[in-house]
Amino acid sequence: MSKITSKLQVTIPKRLAEAYGITPGDEVEFRAAGDIIHLVPAGQRQAVRLSLAERKRAFAAATARQREREKRMTLPKEPPADRGWTREELYDRDKAR
Image 1 (tube, rainbow, N blue to C red):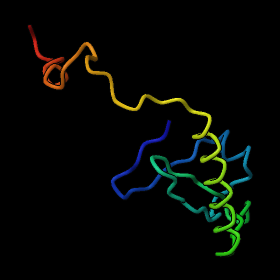
Image 2: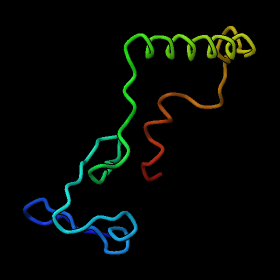
Image 3: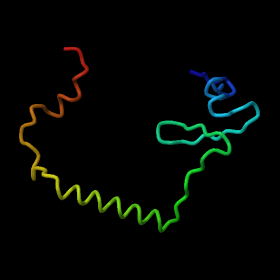
């Protein structure tokens, strides 16, 4: 595991640097990916950039798949009257009793 220095610098473990061909002076890119950060060596795989039309087509296809899944689902019309717990109980679960 690496630590961040006061100058916000990171040391890459030697075995990882060797495995990915990273040498002193190489440039790397940090990419945000939700709750994680990807470190990508320069010249490595670039993300495929889809055109707007391709992204719309992919979104429409994913939406159609989801609609098909929803048709097969059997959900109750109304939520159950008695769940066995109340909303108030959720807020005092961690309190000492």
